Length: 116
Image (cartoon, rainbow, N blue to C red; front, side, top):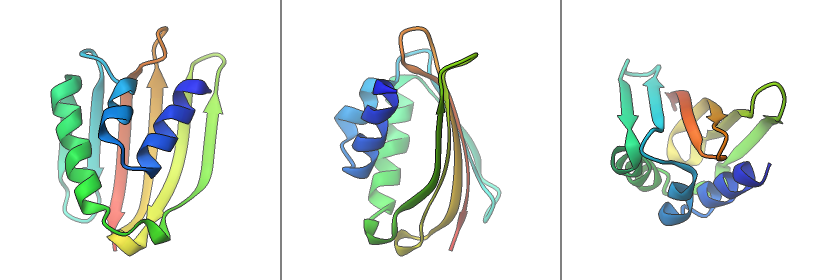
């Protein structure tokens, strides 16, 4: 739960350094955009940092940010299921699944989203 709390707070405040504390060199983030078919994979700290840098630049207005589903699970696997949207910044809907390793780092993150 503590690792997830850090991620959620860092995302909401768009704190790039803080959000990167959740990843390591073995982390993999995959992002699919339903609107244009882009399907990108980012591996390791440098690539994932670049992803979040671009995402935070896209999310210029967080007034519409909503997360109606946030479900952390500790057992049998450490994971979080998240549904969110931010239409004020062009994200109609998004779904994330986070899997955490034994050191509470995000080992795998899968994102699918649609633009407004």
